[in-house]
Amino acid sequence: MGNKTTEERNMELMQTLDDAWNAQDLETFAKRHKRDVVVRWPGQGPTHGVDAHRLEAIQFFKTFPDQRLGNRPYKTFFASGDWTCSLASNHLGLPRAPAATQPRDSAYRKAVPPEGCTRDGVETKPAGFRRKSRLDPSLR
Image 1 (cartoon, one colour):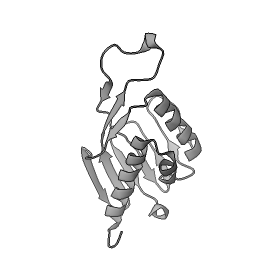
Image 2 (tube, one colour):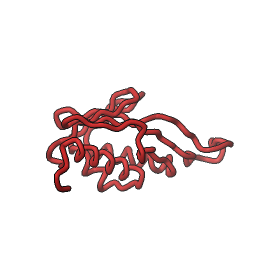
Image 3 (cartoon, rainbow, N blue to C red):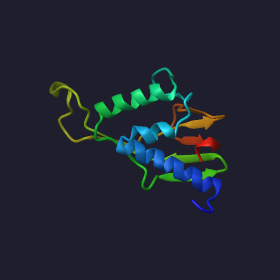
């Protein structure tokens, strides 16, 4: 770690959060969130707490076992103070569903970046295509 700036450390934390998502490493995923996180996904109500968010992640991985965030490299990635901003592609892969509902062609490929904002220790994920996160100093 050495002489890393706040920005460098926060970017590292964001990168390892997305690496954990890609690896379906729920232990690291949970460590990168506050216990009282509030997550907002487009088209549904908010999720309250890291345990509920973890259950969402498990269901997402069951539905899209081959999904990957394109975070190495990100399309855009920078930090300022406690804030980070990242833009990544999201490759969902084929959903695991009954054969009658499976798509006939290739895997779903969407350039739908992850999004989120952490303010005062509460992460939210508003609708949009940016991810801005203010990382809690206790995670450093």
